[in-house]
Image 1 (cartoon, rainbow over the protein chains, first blue to last red):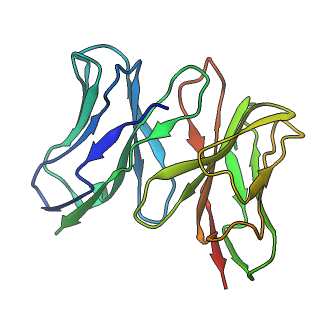
Image 2 (cartoon, helix red, strand yellow):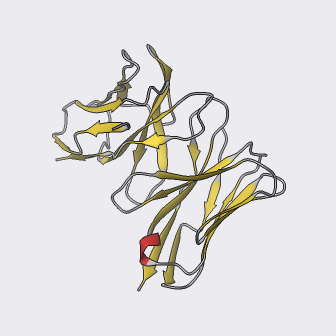
Length: 110
Length: 113
């Protein structure tokens, strides 16, 4: 089945530093979604990317979909303590279940 | 208030017992899913259902069972055959082919004592 590899597994940053997590696939993806899970919480949908080379922004978060549609990234500018959590990429194909990456756990040191 | 409700939030099980986790949604979604999450790990698919009275095994179905008798309900039973059931269980739903977004319940923590 389809798999997505996500790196890094963990990232510790000082508050105010930037953060990036990457999601890679060996096959072309039709779309990619990003979710955030706060500690002790449940995953919450952030965004979906569909088009080759697509870039979307949500305040300090920038999402990119690669030109070949095989990779994606989530970049956070000037992290804050509220950004703490695990960020997952996920792939949705037709009516099949969502396939998740293993996530990147972000810690922000104040 | 629309959404997905999971219960109980915390559950303790003795070894050898079956337990059932409830998942109810009032979003009128066709598809429902159960995922398992171990501490510091990603989400692994246990079972999913795309329509009432039909369900499919996911990647780690052994030791679990489900039913989908009603569109809004998709309970998960963790049986005694599941050797390591302590985990966080997440139920999710999706509108079907027309729906891209997956909505998650708040999860159920199961601990074997």
